[in-house]
Amino acid sequence: MSQTIHSYASLTRDLERSGIRRQDTLLVHSSMKSIGQVEGRADTVLDVLSDYLRDEGLLVFPTLTWSNVNAEQPVFSVRDTPSVVGILPELFRQRPGVHRSRHPTHSVAALGRDAEAFVEGHERFDSPAALGSPWERLRQRRAKIMFIGAGIASNTFLHGVEEWGQAAHILSDTPQQLIVIDEAGRRHSVPSRRHIGNHSRYYACLEPHFEAIGALSRVRFGDANTTILDAEPCAVFVLALLKRFPAAFTLEWNQANPNFFADVLP
Image 1 (tube, rainbow, N blue to C red):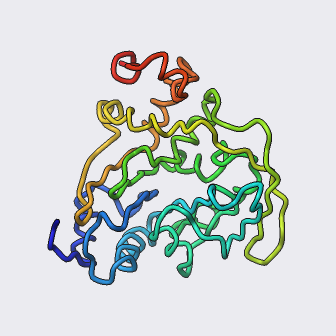
Image 2: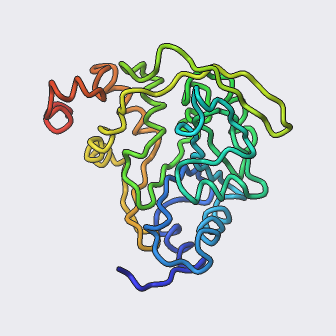
């Protein structure tokens, strides 16, 4: 295990070396533990990312609540419901100036250029990552997606691409009736369909294909092996795949075609 103690300055240098620009839109999936020892711990990591992007760019974290908001526990509070995807998103959503979208299961939190507009209206959609939602806005902004110590299977953006491409068996037929409590304490009834089928188990199979089209790079952030994806070319690739094979990410398809991602795709 590395004995290096990382600092604000050293982590900022890692960002600069990664190819991420200060004017980029950046979605971060993260494992704090993978970064190693950091002076100031998680707050320093968030300071680095926030300061790098807040003036010219946009920093986005997933603040998902899919496992603690459901038919049995239907209430999502934008201010109070904790995220279930790690310490960095949970601390980030509570920071001054950060705006969180109002989707009951797949919210995002954003800081920087047009952050409030970026998260606006997410609760109007009955699926987690619909066309017109913040997840599609990542594509419109040609965002980069950074996986700090995490594999690309942890990729909610690709769930969105599957929705837009009308992939087979991606959404439940019947919505759950959930309740969103907004920042002012108002309650909204929000019907919401769920992602089904555990499609993300196959997302990592796309890694060599994303690398082949120049949409994937590998860097270090602290001690963490880190992967960066370019959202737009990844979306184009997956939409073309789904047009040919709508069931490509289903268990049934992969049981019938066990070498599909290695042998069938170009």
